[in-house]
Length: 116
Length: 115
Image (cartoon, rainbow over all chains, first blue to last red; front, side, top):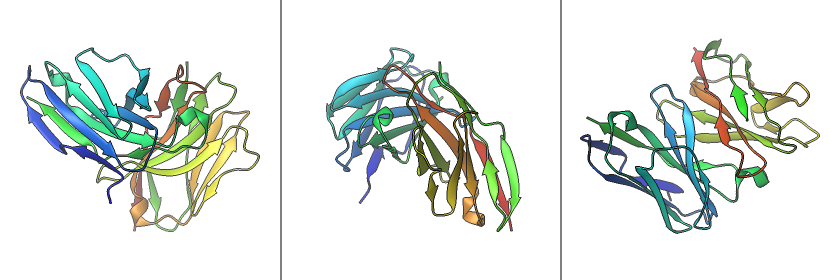
């Protein structure tokens, strides 16, 4: 059974389009995250939800909008895609917020977004 | 603001040797945790080991151990008896004490094991 799944795995689209990435976890975790990993492998937190509540909202363009319909799902919608949005986007989950204890994150397989 | 430094962008090690990957951090939070993750070429991120700032002993997990020096703010990952499958990117991460603090990952170290 896949613990954290993301769809799609690959996404190729043109500038200006709107796209969504979906994430689901079956671990019963309370906290979920979105990360962006650039071509140099630098990993940056974008958003985090705890029990459907937004708890981390880093400085990202407001073209990026997360949504958590329930605590097992966290989706990422991106409007008006730009070339600089090309990256690998990782979803992750943890039992609780990382700063409260040894709650390691379980990562999804990543979605490679290519904007042409 | 938190900051993490991994000074070794790339390392080559002979199979079966031990290897130490450096991580230094800068945080003003009174309590924090340190995580290490592995990212093989296949792309997935895999949790390796955790150290709490108030843990009395260095964390160990199989062939992985941490050389945690709180006063120096360093948490180096030691991999004993390296294997070809250890070839990967390794990231150190420090979440802050509260959601007001960022979850910061280091820039990573690319470890290559030579047969």
